[in-house]
Image 1 (cartoon, rainbow, N blue to C red):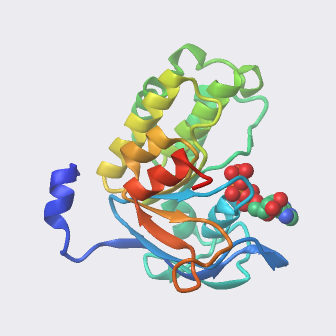
Image 2 (cartoon, rainbow, N blue to C red):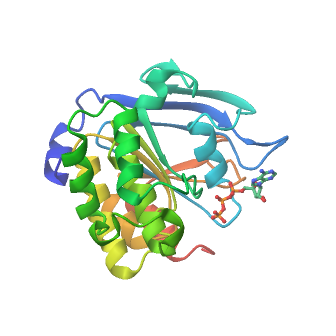
Length: 245
Ligand SMILES: Nc1ncnc2c1ncn2[C@@H]1O[C@H](COP(=O)(O)OP(=O)(O)OP(=O)(O)O)[C@@H](O)[C@H]1O
């Protein structure tokens, strides 16, 4: 969806994918103020904030990997349950975790993920994503032999060769060179405009400016009636460019 189309559809009912209500996260103690926000199809919500503010912790709770201390998270109106097949089918994650089968090549990994999620045209889907992630020269390599940037692109490819209505990404720009960051922004923009709901933690102002439709400022001040502030993309870009303001 272009920005013009997005403006035109403003005011119509939004197709909410993720609903978050006073979500409180932490490890025994809260790490940040509660979060209240929703994310519709074709929207990209960025989580911004200082190192250690709690962005990854919020993402882990959204993915059902961390039990919240309070509040609710709903996917298509249903409570998050990472054990349910529907939840796992709908939610793709790119977190900072390398979970590879050491003996499977790059192409074999992607084919395994796509097949496991019931993708029909596995070879075509995997080939297209290898191309998009500039991994065609590494198809036969084992993950351990990849550079750190290539490993990151393989993680991204694994999230994009499978069905999803929600894509959760934790600093996807990490370890990518400038060309890789541009390609990442292009790919995520296409994903957003194809109707996926995106939530990503990022410190990258270029990615934020190109992609964000809104942002949550993750901190412990409870600036918005006791919850983390929800701001527009311009305000988020100003915060990321000048975090001490
Ligand atoms: N497994 C854990 N157990 C206890 N505390 C943790 C754990 N993981 C993170 N923390 C703490 O929770 C706080 C929030 O960490 P988190 O990784 O969510 O921050 P972040 O905003 O993603 O930071 P960054 O921008 O550096 O990635 C930090 O104080 C961190 O030390």
